[in-house]
Image (cartoon, rainbow, N blue to C red; front, side):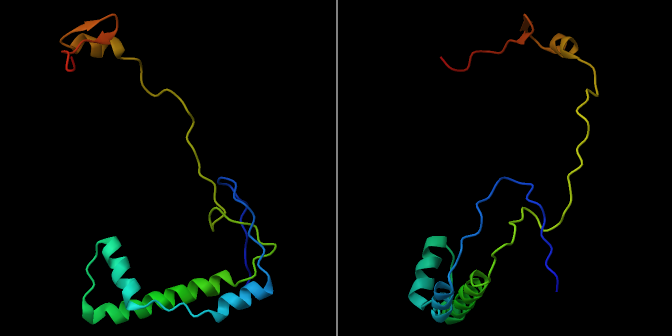
Length: 126
């Protein structure tokens, strides 16, 4: 499988951090287990209801997600250019041209009250 890098077209990003082999091994050795108390606290903060029956399953799934994140962080990205988007496409913009005429006077003529090119409205705040 060949990796393709795309030139960064968005806002500038800082280069990837260098991670030593010892840091990478230390991350891989830590099993990120999420206990049920942590899940209960997260559910409370997120204001979501997790039943007692599914609490253990949610805890296991969150642990699996954190393990996947650890695997992604362990990948060596030295020499890889950060991407703003995985596809090398440019956005085609239309030309900035006036497409309709100035109808300001026409619209001001429809207003109940207008003076010196401004719409007059009743005073709301005293």
